[in-house]
Image 1 (tube, rainbow, N blue to C red):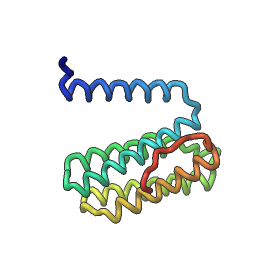
Image 2: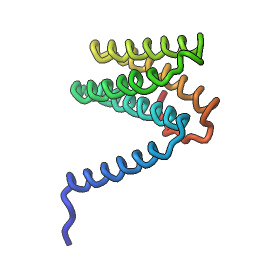
Image 3: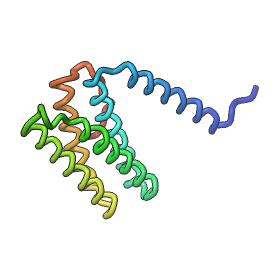
Image 4: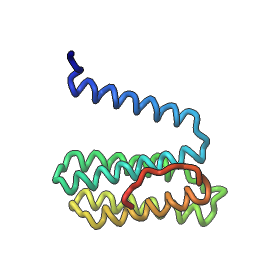
Length: 143
């Protein structure tokens, strides 16, 4: 009996996960898409924390870049400033603070900045899930 090399198995698992996510995204409501963006950003931040603690600078940078991209290009870009008024402006300002803290965490290898940004984003995500998407099942993130 032979088994596929680990790398082939890992690629197959990754492909399966990607297909599952693509299916979920394509069938999602706009509200669920925001929930998925929160999940993706928080997952990337969890990975960044792991890599920061492990001293893996390159992977930490990749994970933080992914989280920043999700926050800026997804969450922040999705805020409706015309209908949201002052709440929308405050939300955008919150995303900008989080992004700044993540850049500083990466630049200075600062676990405290990473933890603060993760908590802020986690609090926003929890508020979103409670108010808009209470059926969304979140992974147990440490935020």
